[in-house]
Length: 174
Image (cartoon, rainbow, N blue to C red; front, side, top):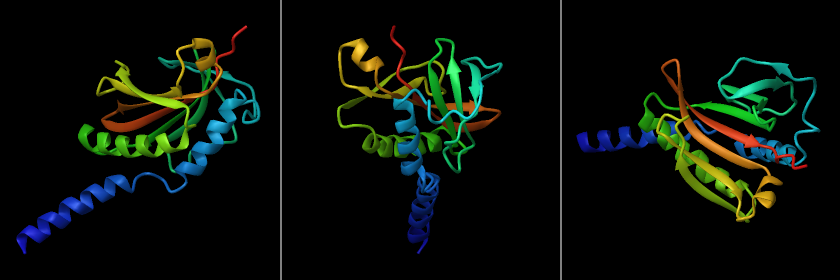
């Protein structure tokens, strides 16, 4: 009986982390990824305002958001790339958040185009020092830059862990 209780406890604790993925994630991702294809032109609802942030320079009002996220906003970075940044609350520990991250990454892989590759690289911005990137599978930068990409990682803010997802619009190449 004790073994059954332990097994059920482990099962339910892993389900609790996996259930944190909002039911609307797939639909929300598709809307925002499609908006990224057009540099978010149809998603912007106002003018950019300057913000103080280590990575972003401005925030732009938008109509599309990831539901049930801790934060969902349209920002620009120092290179003027428009990005939809979303933070989903992770677990209480880095390990729990890594489990949740893997779940989101698996689902995201099914949502990006089939000609996209997935790579994991060193990224000091994130708590576990890695990020996962979904981008066009090409060795030609100009081709990759014309398509939206997605970068995901785990960050810690004020003692809480979050999975950050950055849906980046194409880079404007002149």
